[in-house]
Image 1 (cartoon, helix red, strand yellow):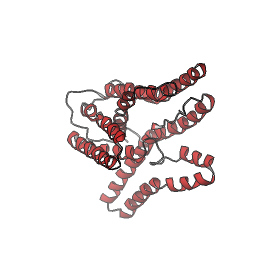
Image 2 (tube, helix red, strand yellow):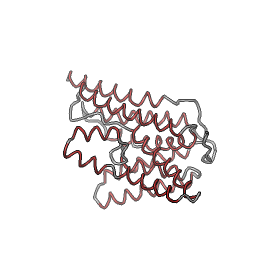
Image 3 (cartoon, rainbow, N blue to C red):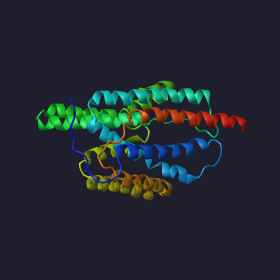
Image 4 (tube, one colour):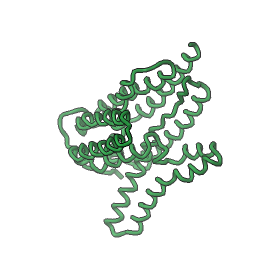
Length: 275
């Protein structure tokens, strides 16, 4: 069954293909900084620019959720890719160790899966509530809280058996242990709830990051505030989205994301052995 959702206001701008391509380039710049730092001191501006990529990808996850023909297949694809990449990370870290403590920790597929889980449950909860199935709605709310609190048993397991805990982190789509943690998950939920209006989306995203920045300033964490500002710079690009899909690139991200991460990691490891 096809799910129909009202798109953001259509206007002149960039289509989905161009925006995703831009985010891929920005993401690659960030990863060049990260893996390059195992070899030498890299310019900080590279990773700050990289903060722009994740919100753009998260935005398109919410768009994908709204337009996909099968929520189940969409979620399964993200979840399986996340699990496989976690095992890939372990393998690359084992076979191609890097200097300066740099390891492969990338796992945005799992974060995207967590976002889709919450969006699906929120949608079903709201539908159940409208249909006066209050008990069912409460169950969805409890499921969302339970998934959020899943970090507690995993944390306790970490004290008893770290290998078992790491295995649990791989298979349990935790909004705490996923890449970017609950902050990115909340951004995804907010983008979805505001997707009918670019103005609402802009207000939500600016206020959300503004609150986080204020909290960081109270904790004297100026570096984090600068990182949040660069995250906010994703907003102008998102607002340029014209609602058009553009050229098909359904599997480009699924292939390019792990491929470029592992190529950069292996290259950094090999160059490190030569130095």
